[in-house]
Image (cartoon, rainbow, N blue to C red; front, side, top):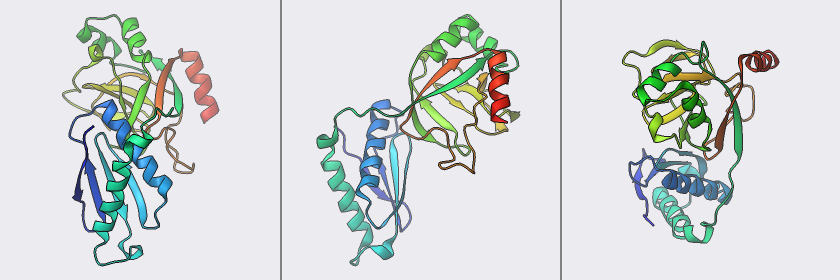
Length: 234
């Protein structure tokens, strides 16, 4: 079991790295450590931000006794890492189902993705909606979930020229990843569908509908269900 490296991230943060590979097993370790750190509720902890294979830990040095706050935090993190095997039992993360209308105006790149993969559009939908994905991290824009678990045969390159505007809720594929655009904005992923569900609302607590460490399953719906759901969300 690999041990992460620790390196300073400014003068009030530490970055733990498990490598540079987007691997689901490593990502689960990242989220497990983040969970244990939050549960420990150290008075100096400001925030911890998980990514694919790293965890950024932000702390308030004014709340740490002694002359070397970073060393104190590093020692605490090392102790949590050393005790990892005691907490290595499988934990069931939250499963979030996201309705998606695939193809047509909702997924204008579905046919191109199917052609590139040597599959029918129906097969792409079946393969995309079959797995349970792991929310590896949020990034790019508020609430944007980067999902691990895409069928390798659905991996396609990003668009050569990104779109100026991608509608909120669009489900896309970019390389070996899939994700959902929570807000209107530019983007270069191949759009295969769209969800009527609101994935980010700054007035909610928490504002993001899915969180790092959650599992996600896409549920295909038709255009009528999309419109009915969108009307409820409005």
